[in-house]
Image (cartoon, rainbow, N blue to C red; front, top):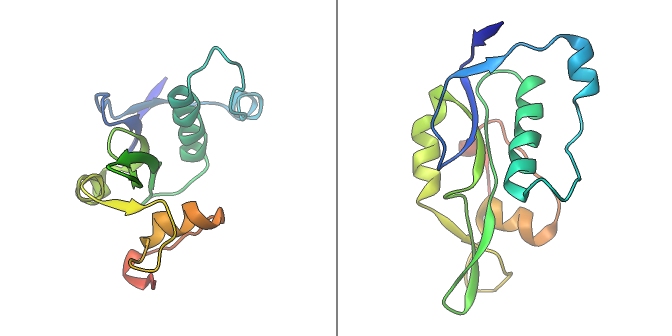
Length: 135
């Protein structure tokens, strides 16, 4: 049986279906690890991790992967063409996020922003509202 969901777990190159399978608690208990097999690509494992996160989270969530890409002679973090988890009410924020990049390297000339600071420090951060975030 399928049920409608306000969440989407996908990459930018996939279509939004708006559906997910309803799982019973036994299935969820068995299916709660991200496969480490070499037969799964990194993208597939990221989508699996996001789908598991989606199963256990509430509404109003946008989770995005930020990946370092080389731009000229520096590395910048981008979420464009990366997997993400989206409550449909946050689709506008997702579209804006795709347009931004942040430095993946510490330097004295610019603030790395939240994604850059997390990448550089290796310490996860979370905020309930980006308006509360301070650099």
